[in-house]
Amino acid sequence: MRKLFPLFLCIFLLTGCQPQAYSSQTFAMDTLMQFTIYGRNGQEALAHASARIQALEQLFSVTRTQSETYAVNHARGEWTAVSAELYELAARTLDLCRETGGALDLTAYPAVRAWGFTTGEYQVPDGETLKELAACIDYSRVELEENRIRLPDGMELDFGATAKGYAGEVLARELREMGVECAILSLGGNVQTIGSRPTGDPWRVGVQDPEGEDYLLVLSVVDQAVVTSGGYQRFFEENGLRYWHIMDPDTAAPARSGLSSVTIVGDSGTLCDGLSTALFVMGREEAAAYWRAHPEFEAVLVSEDGSIAVTEGLEDRFVLNTGYEDRDVEVIRR
Ligand code: ADP
Ligand code: MG
Figure 1 (cartoon, rainbow, N blue to C red):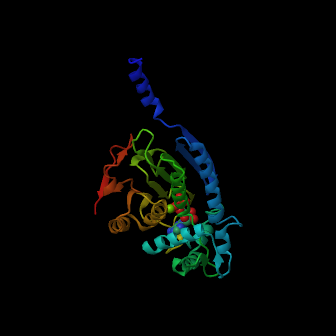
Figure 2: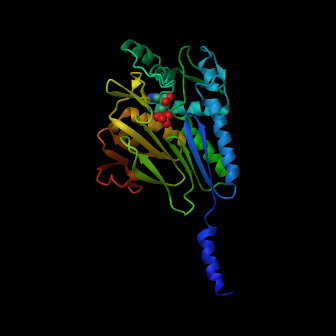
Figure 3: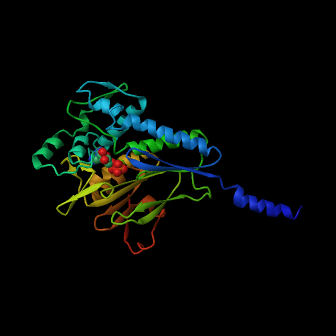
C-alpha cells in the first residue's frame, strides 16, 4: 500500500486537477459565439451564458423591432425609458465617444446603413449624400438622464462597436459570481477570459493576419479581454477598392487611417471593444498618443503595409506565429 500511494497521488495530480471542459456555440449579435467553461458547475454556467447573451441582444439589437434600441431610434425626438443595462451601455459608450474626441460615435448608424452594411446590399453613396450623413453624426446630441434616452428626430444610434465587449464583461462578472474560475468566451472578434487555463498557464489568444487566414501573433492573457477590429472583418469591393464597416464619423465613409487591424487588451471588455474601433479610425500615430495618455489598456496595431506595433505592456506577452517570425515589431513606449 505504501508503495502504491505515490503512484496513486501522481495519477491524481495528472488527471484529477484538470477540471472538465464544457463548450457550446450560439449565434447572437450577428456573429458565432463559442463559450468554454471549466469546472464542476460548467454545464449550469454555460446555460446561463447562452440565455444571458440572447437577453442582452434583445435589448441592444438595432434591427429587431422589439428591442429597446429600436424604440429609442424611432421615438421621433421624444424620451424613451430604457432598462438599467441599456442605459449603462449607452452611458459608457457615450463616455468613450467623448474621450476619443468623436473617433467613436454611437450615432454613425445611418452611414453604416447607407453603405449597405446592415443588409448586405452594398453601395457607394454619392458625395452629397455622404455630406448629409456626416452632418447627422454627432454623439453630443444624445441625451441621457435617469434611465431614459433622447436623440433628435432623424438620428439613430447603434451599439455595434461596444455591445459584444459589454456582453463579454457582463458574462465574465456573472460567471465569476457563480464560482467559475476558468473560462474563455469568444464573441466574434471579442475574446473574454476568466482566470487562466486549467493548467495554470495564461490563455493564448491569436491575433489574425488581416491579409490572410492565419494568426499573426499570439498573446498571453489572464482574466482580461482581447478585442480586434479590422477592415477585413466585414467589407465589399467595388472598382478595385475595398470598403469596410468601420466608419470615419467626419466623412460618413469607411475609415482609411492606414491601419488594417487594431487589437486592444484590457480588464474592461466594453473599453476594449470601443477602443478597438476608435483607434482604428484614429490611425497609428494618434492611437499611440491616445495610449500614452490612457493607462488602462494595451494595443497591437497592424498597418496596411504589414508592419506591427505593440504597446510596451505587451512586449513580453506575445510571440509571432510560425511563418511570421521575420516581421518587424515596433514597441511603442510611454
Ligand atoms: P465588429 O462589430 O466587427 O466587432 P467593431 O467593434 O469595430 O467591429 O464595430 C463596428 C460596428 O460599429 C459597425 O458594424 C457599426 O455598426 C458600428 N460603427 C462603425 N463605425 C463606427 C464608429 N466610428 N463609431 C461607433 N460605431 C461605429
Ligand atoms: Mg469595437
